[in-house]
Image (cartoon, rainbow, N blue to C red; front, side, top):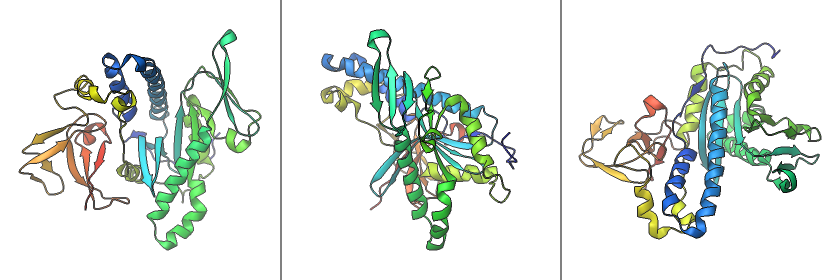
Length: 338
């Protein structure tokens, strides 16, 4: 059905499984309920509903990837920067033959793509049923892929860049995944190049299989070790940025109260630092006499100082989550060096 594939006998592997930035932001929004000003409560509740839908959709995609019985390595919630531009990638999947960049949409209502490639959402019931245009997730994700290609080109020498100009379009693929199983997708009139980039969550692994079948030649296939390493190099470039929720809801004066109510496992919280006299330094194996250790922006665990081995920040210091070896948490704080 899918052609002749040469596949590694391994996988799938979720490199940064654990609490995501979206989940942590949702927890913080829920914690603000008791202190948010009255005139901002409706805004907060709307944002909580949207955040819950986003988290639920991303969990569905992670479930499909982990249970599709196909060799792949993937990371979730990857933030990249290049030449002043940023991209927030929901899922980056490395397969034996491709890198697949996934934009997750857990939209309420039915989705229609017209002959021009425009997206229209229809939602509600009876007289309250509404139609509205939405920004094209295909265009949004295409920009993410273009930024990744620019990063890959910037890390290559002149000879390799010449080759990459001809192969990157084939190697990097963009797909929009609709995670709400109740939504209907009508795309019969859509341009083929747009229609082929929009699928439902339950079609994701079969989509990847068919995609890889187009390049099913032994000289293209990567070993699983190579796939995992390639995925890890992108994870090393992750540069997440949190949002100031208290400012968003006009709560600068309530910042301390809100922070104290946020969920956590111990006295430290995201955005705080804890003193430690014996925090190990993985690059030298020696303790610092006095160390100020940040907590992980993803899971709240203490972080450890490491040195980047790949990518544009190779050789530079960064704080990495201390639980990475056990949970694959990908929390990172880059260290700015003068």
